[in-house]
View 1 (tube, rainbow, N blue to C red):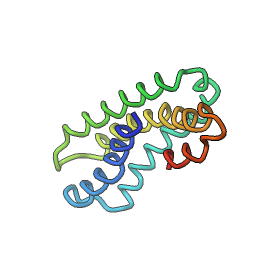
View 2 (view 1 turned 30 degrees about the vertical axis):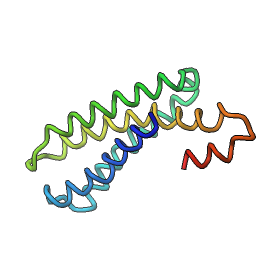
View 3 (view 1 turned 180 degrees about the vertical axis):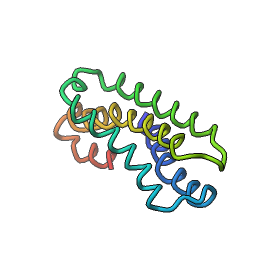
View 4 (view 1 turned 60 degrees about the vertical axis):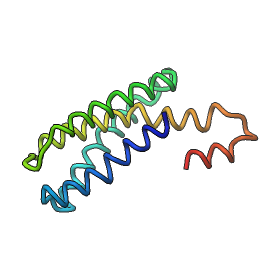
Length: 127
């Protein structure tokens, strides 16, 4: 799960940014604004629902995150070079919703599940 989520996250940030700059002629400021939408949508609900998200099993949370990332990626594949800000923003909102479920589950899996003697290995995998 972590490998798939990381590769999808990499595609969301790096590949989409490069595509927008090279083929859709977006400036870095507009690309940053679009990625900022993803961060705001991901962090605000995550902060507000922090206690509720702790009661969801990490595996279920990661599956929900995978669903939102996959749907965002599928929606992004329907673009061509004549895209507008709204279509990309919808894609980033979906990716931001995946962060709501992804980040708490990864932190919980990495730092609360394993015993203390394995913490150095967990930090290495997490990084």
